[in-house]
Picture (cartoon, rainbow, N blue to C red):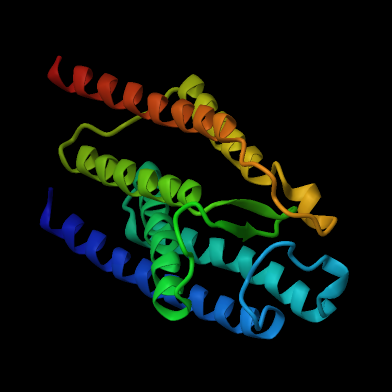
Length: 221
């Protein structure tokens, strides 16, 4: 891997770690405000939140994604590499968000602990292991993408491969939103549809592996 790529990966990772702590700090404040006895389900209904705080929280989540995208656009040199850095910083951010919560609140108790992930467009809930595995996959695949770029073997997914990968992402989001309506009604998450989550992961990772193999064959030829 090129020295400048290693340099970028290190500093983008540092940004992801620090942003993970900032995100966790906001959650610490919210939990002290709305869950002084410790976070647990059922979550508060939207009507129970201060209207301004709810709007600010939703906008903050959207701005967080734009921040991560901005880092990817600045760190990457071209289209797919920029997307790789976006995935990379997203993964670092998500993992160290949970590390920061564990260090500050001694939470989650385990990887099986349920968490509220996002509020857009409805609550996303899942055991911690599920988003953590997605984040880890983001880090690994993004590093592989950068290595391919440095070796002159850039990955160029076909339209079909892009479509399948996007479908995998949508399926994963569906698994996270599965219990969303129940959460909005003030219910408790019953079961995580891990088979749906796993199907989305397989679609995404298998498509990535197929694209990488094709790039290697073309470079060898």
